[in-house]
Each structure stands twice: as C-alpha cells, then as structure tokens.
Image 1 (cartoon, rainbow, N blue to C red):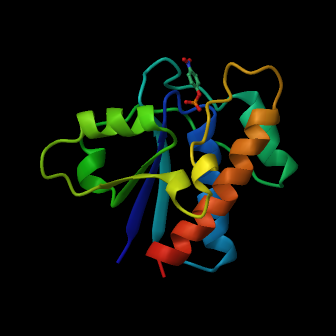
Image 2: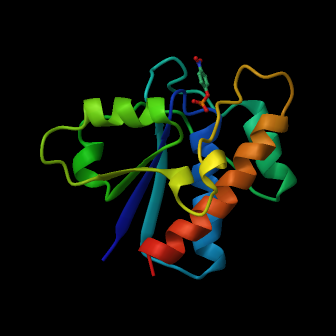
Image 3: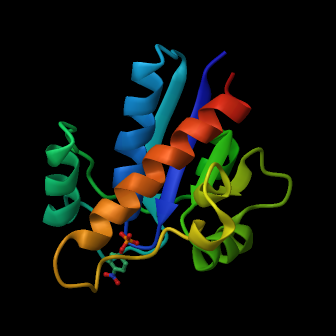
Length: 154
Ligand code: 4NP
C-alpha cells in the first residue's frame, strides 16, 4: 500500500518545500518505502516558481536538494492524499475550509509531532531578513518528520 503525504504552507516557497525534502530524506534514511511526498501552496502567487533561494540554500547546507516547482492545492488533493500537513494555525483553518465533505485526507499540523508545545508552530520566515528562520524551520521539520514517521508510519 502506498501512503501519500502533502506538505502545505501559504506560498509553497519556504516552509512546505523544506518539509517535503526533509520528509523524503527521513523516509529514505529509515529505508521506508511506498510513501509519496509532495508539497503545495494555499495561495497562487508563486505557482510555477522554484522555492525561495534561502530555502534551497538552507537545504543545500544539509546536503539536500530541492527541485520543487510551486503548485496550488486542489480539491482533488483531499481525495488523493492520506495526510495533509499545515505549518501553522492559519494553514490549518484554510485547509479545514477548503476540504470537501467526507474527504479522505487527515489534516494535521506538522509541529504537533515531536515538538514542544511552545515550539509547535513552524513560523513563516519569508518576510525576515536573512536565512536564520529557514534553518529554524528546517530543524523543526527534522524533529517533526521523524516523530510522525515513528508514530504513524511504523
Ligand atoms: P511560505 O512563506 O508559506 O512558507 O512559503 C510565504 C511565501 C510567500 C508569501 C507568504 C508566505 N507571499 O505572500 O508571497
């Protein structure tokens, strides 16, 4: 059985591409097969673009590549994916609003896995100067993806 995970954030250029790449890396390192991972945006502003250069360089510093092209979430995603993750409470309320009735996908906040309550929001680093917020998001994703895999994909 293939399980499908979709990482969501507002623009799909900062947090969710990082979460996608980190989840793939986490699964590969654990030799966990049959899991498909993708990411998408709530908004349409950056559709067709690559991730923010700071997301790409943060991942590169950890020897990870990001080739994702931004896409916007579609109604069909709620039927196709088993798990759809938001990064913050705004993402979660948008996901709940967009989800068709009876959709298959479980809507989860990524930081609810493995992170302390005070650290569970993966904050948007887009408007910050520099890349420090991207490294923070990366580190949160590393902990949360490993915890999710252990708790729900074992
Ligand atoms: P992300 O960050 O949701 O982590 O990709 C953002 C990127 C772009 C915008 C907002 C958030 N924007 O408004 O363009």
